[in-house]
Length: 235
Image (cartoon, one colour):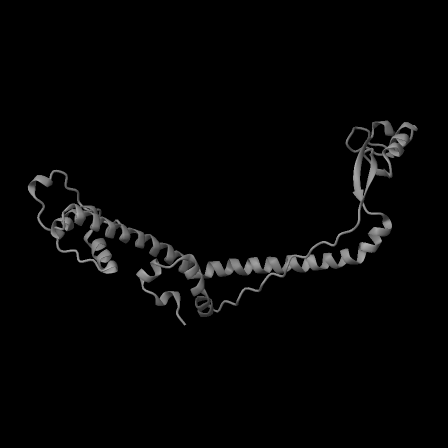
């Protein structure tokens, strides 16, 4: 069984995220990590038949009626609601005219329907609690696994960054070789202006490039000579 760390740096740089994922089971085994327990399907709340009611909302609760006319008739009858209104300064029980109330449509089951749905709703609530517990346990285990495998992902990101730099050196080399009409020594001299000798050597090793020692650049082309950066590859 092949592990991520069995691969060389160039091979690790060529991996995709899916490739790394495919190699993680061996890393989990080496670290003693248990496989993540699957999360059960999220329970679905059972439907309970509802109907629309014309409800008088007076601030203390609702009275529901089959028709709008019935609700309006009660408001116009002079009926009042008795209770406290905690949203106002009147902190004593008092009678409040229903004319101050509003009518809205509320959907709710009848008592008989609610009782019939009771067993299914209780079962759903138990399943929901079990599901939430399993989901939290899965998230905590996944977080711990991510922390344990952080070295793999950090190394992969570093290898990808280095690989991109070495590919840029390869592309630059081929471009310079073309511009110098096949004069490899001259192309190598110009390449040495852009990259450090260590980075060039590694890119040549990775991609099988034959890059000779830099030749002497003609005097007419030495007007803008730059020293290669001391460090141009992400480590």
